[in-house]
Structures are given as structure tokens and as C-alpha cells.
Amino acid sequence: MRMTALLCYCTCPDADTAGRIASALVEERLAACVNILPGMRSIYRWQGQVETADEVLLLIKTSREAYPALQDRLRDLHPYELPELLAVEPALGLPGYLQWLADETRRKD
Image (cartoon, rainbow, N blue to C red; front, top):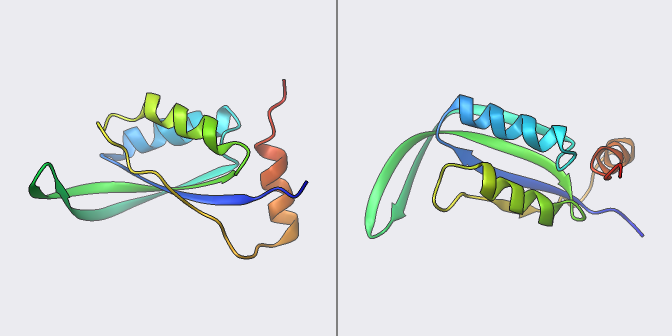
């Protein structure tokens, strides 16, 4: 069976929250790697109002197999009422990197 890589986007309210979530996801093997990108401004509609917020973006590299557990864990860790979590499947990737991603997100039970 071929492993499917996913790149997930998740916004966080600040760097501390982003770091805490990223560390937990990697330590728990739900993500192979998480990049933390600061300095993002979001403009969005929430509960009928247009809102603006300074946020931090997480780029989470995971596998399709690990995604359901990642989604559940993110809901537990995230302070937002409705966290952003979008997953996209890359069309291509360096085979060695994709193998590393699969290895690092495989549960070691």
C-alpha cells in the first residue's frame, strides 16, 4: 500500500500556542515535521462579523493514515472554538523525503 503525504495548514493565535501544538504533534508521531511561520494577518468572517487577527501559521507534514488522529488531537490542543485545519495532497515529492515522512508518522506500538 502506498503512503499518501498530506500538507496541513493550521492557524494559531500566537507563537507559544503554535510551538506547543507543533511539539505535541511531532512527539506523538502525528506529524513528521511542523513549520511555524509567524507574522501572518488573517481577515475572515466569524459569526456574522468581519474580523482581523495576527496569527501564526503551522505547516504540518503528515500521512493520510495519521490524519484522523492528528485531527482529533489538534481539536484537544487548540484554543480556538473552530480551529482551521485544511489538508492538501501534494502531487509529487522527493521519494526519500516521502519515505522519511511515512516512517516518522508510523505508530511505534
